[in-house]
Image 1 (cartoon, rainbow, N blue to C red):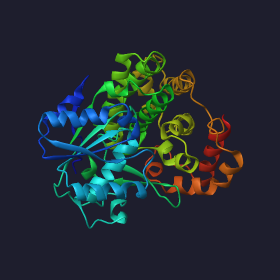
Image 2: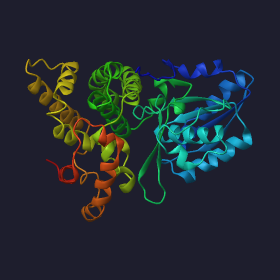
Image 3: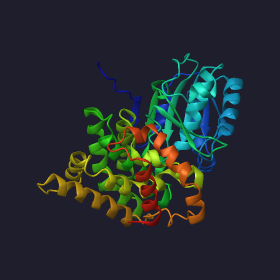
Length: 383
């Protein structure tokens, strides 16, 4: 049986934001965040559409990882305003919230349980096109089939996963990333790196995903330092493209163990990319035997020349750890500020959620309950 590879139309390059004027619409609803409003980018988007004679206005703001309480007001605004084009301008939280709101706008009778059921979304009704404009270089939501939401009661992540959530178009304008702080740049870069590494090693991997993942890793290792340390414009551009390539890879295969373990982020209010950076070396070490060939290929992509595949795989793991340290990221969850008592009190919740995650179940090596606990302990204390 044939598989499909899903991607939106992608516009990229400096000032690619101006391509918004090519989208035909009568009414545009913009979902963004306070940072983009403060920097003037929301007004700029409104101006681009105004020049084309199209009415556009902001319909809501998303300033944290989205919960239902954040999405439902967006849905109400969309239904009242009735746009035929929705533009999500922001980082992963903005795009995920906007995608969830778009789904509920397209299907007024749709319930949360259906939205959060894997592949449970029916085809959309065509009320509105959806264009994603990422302003960070990491989440890749602009091309993915996923919207990540936080359960307001349990604080655990839930996924809306469907090919119908893929935006109609993604606009990659590196200029929008130039104001990213160094820490956010590092977190986002490791989010993208984790996507690429896991797309290579998941049991759902395929040739098309691996091609994107390999080049994304090459770009990340070649440009993340320059994007952080010097705010080099070329490095920023390459990192922006790398994040989208990595997301195309993982969205068309699946994420792996580090993503399966990231209930740490919402439970302890840590950025997803920071948690990925902390967990990735531990999950890679755990899967080294089963994922050896994939890690060896990734080692070749970053310039390692050992003939022995095992040596090259181990070398790539060392390169990941070295990059983590070079960009001044914490190497343990304790260093991230997670309190010891709180962490171990949440251990059963973390272990059970990890074991139930589809990302864990599709990882190269699936840990049992005791192995999952040990992985969390190593990630907390360091190894």
